[in-house]
Length: 141
Length: 149
Image (cartoon, rainbow over all chains, first blue to last red; front, side, top):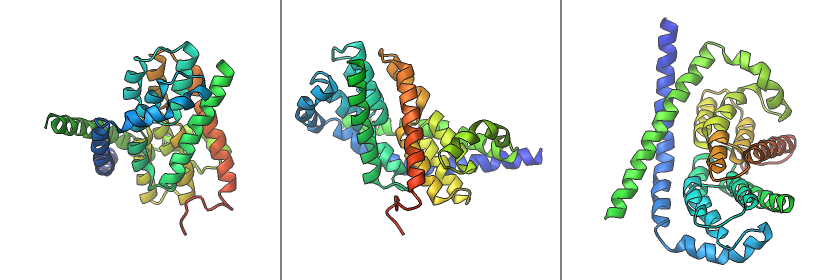
């Protein structure tokens, strides 16, 4: 019984400490990204990327879905996805791309101090996004 | 002003969300450790972690990240490394794996709900992460991946 109590106490302390660590890292980034979402910046970036969507066999509007997913997160991306008319394979292509690379500001902030630096994390994720997108588009047509 | 309130409210909600998930996970991890539950689970997962060139101590943070998400896996990683259970190399490789593949059920189901092929998402993500981690773990000895030291 004493062992269980000690275990629970240690676990609770680790939980509170880890929560505090995550909050300290994510909260400022979360707020910054929230306000960024209310500026025209993401829309402009999406406009710029529209022509590139052709290589993934996606309509130009998909650029906004990718930009929103990468900057804000998956739920925001799915909201944006509903406004674009896509075929079944296009939905899967977009989903695969976004599942590799999303919510980059917050997630990179969390893990950037754990071995891999910011630059390498972003390179890996964006590369996986592009490669999987190309593969998926080629495979599903 | 409304925007500020909305942002702060969202921030507060995210704190509560983190705590609600993080505290039970850390308690469960502590129990698993103290009652040696992992030794049983190890038989299932150790071939996979070994294939990727990871130590068995990496298994728990890896599983937390795969099931619950990158932040929680990261939290478990930091905790394990503070307890001195994890080498820097393991930590780098686990982060690499999790960056490509985390919250696998949640992320997959979210897209299945809008009509994506879930099996494809699920398997491609796992396979990419496994292969990438194995390749880099073999090269890590000669390659200074962390950009430090």
